[in-house]
Image (tube, rainbow, N blue to C red; front, top):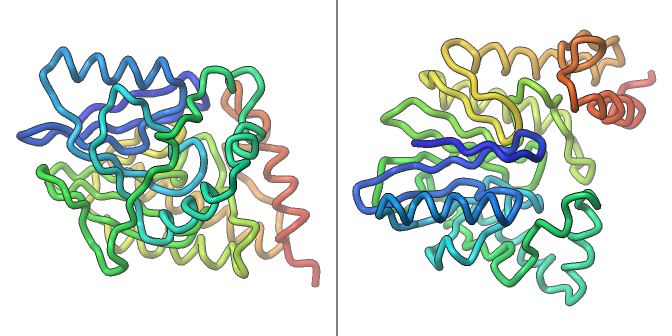
Length: 262
């Protein structure tokens, strides 16, 4: 297994190796970065057997023609969400509007974008010829979000959760965003208790007891936010990582929208 970190928001692409090729999880951000991954695989004689998008946000739906035409999977809800977006003839403009102007010209919004095949609703593993990868579906952050547990190596690929730099980002369209997120943390804690490596969608890879620490940190943030209490979190305030100062603005917006006022 290898992790490729993008220059954009420490976005992590995970390459899982099997006997006949690789599974690529959340292929990346910038076209040249994905092209570099394709070159590396080609030099190593490794084919791309499958892809997986952990959730239907634009930065997790990208692909590169040089990675080939292997099937790309997501949960049924994830695939349905992006299929509805792609049905809009103006989808490219809408997605481009979500991307920072300083990188939008380096992001490939071509016909490979979002071409995700939904797994059956009861699927529990990624269908590919490699190590068993368990699908842990929940509704935190985005519809049909999935964490993936690479069982034989104890690696949890968390999607946009459990970051050392990014606070929980709530799905503003959900009826109960905080409840969904707390439920997801409970599910991940129960389903991936033996994981010794945690790979977030954005941020540093964690090892050892970092999974439990990050679950506890996210849970404490959410409960304080829900209850309208002051949030004491190392991802906010003076200890914030350089380049992540905007997370404070995200927190302020979530506090205004979701904190109890009664």
